[in-house]
Image (cartoon, rainbow, N blue to C red; front, side, top):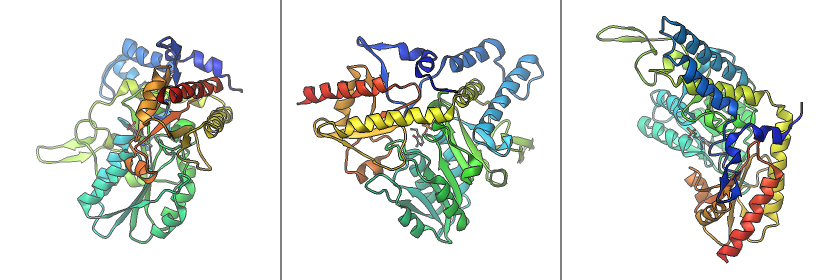
Length: 405
Ligand code: PMP
């Protein structure tokens, strides 16, 4: 198999858009990726042919919807190499997945227990553990970030002890692109008996999330960052942990028996899937993963590396530009500031030229404070981006520099 970026681009209708007379250069993929036609078709086909509530129906449409919905769960299971399909919980996204774990964890923590998060966390990860610790009286510790934008492993080693109950870290930093050594970090946490959650919002999109290989207890990710729809995501959790974990939301589907005064809980995965699920989007997320997994992953990785290498090279020679985050292991993200112009101005002026980037704190305010910047401009790459688009970013940045001079 090989990698034909032109053929891939053909499958994404939105990439044909023209912005103020310029071809769209979409470099905001860490925020959300665009969707191939097959994902759009899966969604339309579901609503056009078999929309129905799942699991309880006594009719054909309900059967078909249930089959497609559960098939999508199997696709996710295989994608992340989960041992059991029951361990794959549909959520609204990474944020909800993390909140489910925090809800369970919060009730198991006591004063004296320690939770470890990181200085590069997305707020979805950091703030959620802050709240779980505040509610339970546990202590939150955070792994510092080095000048290169890596997690300080020596500091992490020194933090782990018999009080450590839980450790959470991002697979890949959304703000810097740093790929963390999640397998090694998980192994260290396991030595002290802590549970481990990996925030895979940015990791899964690059196709290397094997939960058994990582050895973690929980892995969370969102459909919309992996060429699927918004509003759907996955919490994978070990059955041995999830089946004893306190339930999250209550309602239909998650119960087994109900009396006027009490209720018992359903088995996994339904125990954590109260109410009508987002069936159409789950099916379309399954389609996105099926589509993505069918690509030659070595070729995808080589292409993404070439994009980042080119962007880094051009950024390094660009006058007045500073890259934030120079980790050895890095993927998909070029975060930068310029000596002229607030990141928001840079973003605005790039947009006038058809180049879409994100600016601001990237939901990582402590990380911005660590680098002493108000925010950054962030170009983030996906498999449909081309080297020409990377060049176009820097041509547009030259104009921004002139405009701001
Ligand atoms: N963690 C990271 C690292 C992210 O990049 C994001 C999304 N930007 C999230 C968590 C939250 O994901 P979602 O908004 O899809 O729930």
